[in-house]
Image 1 (cartoon, rainbow, N blue to C red):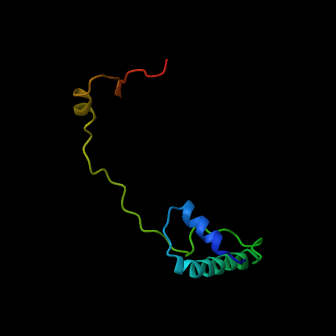
Image 2: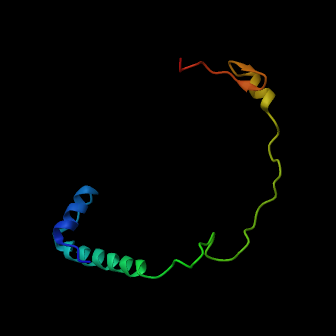
Image 3: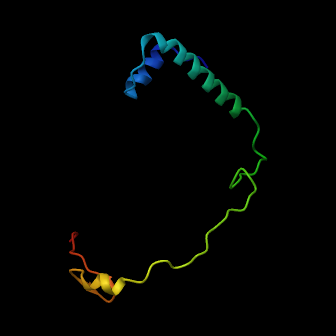
Length: 95
């Protein structure tokens, strides 16, 4: 797929990117090559390929699930403007 100079200028304008006029031809060539690669990748048959959760079949290291903070709920609710049955009360904003 061939990208024109005017297309590069339009995309640069929409993206609010300043491109030097001398560099427009190089950007057009680079973008054309990227789109050609995408077309080439789209032509690869992938209907029988199962999706992967991760590109490498590895097991993730997880940290132990341990409590590191003390429960400060009572102390925090004691200084709250309004709390009831363990919940913070806030003013109604929708009638």
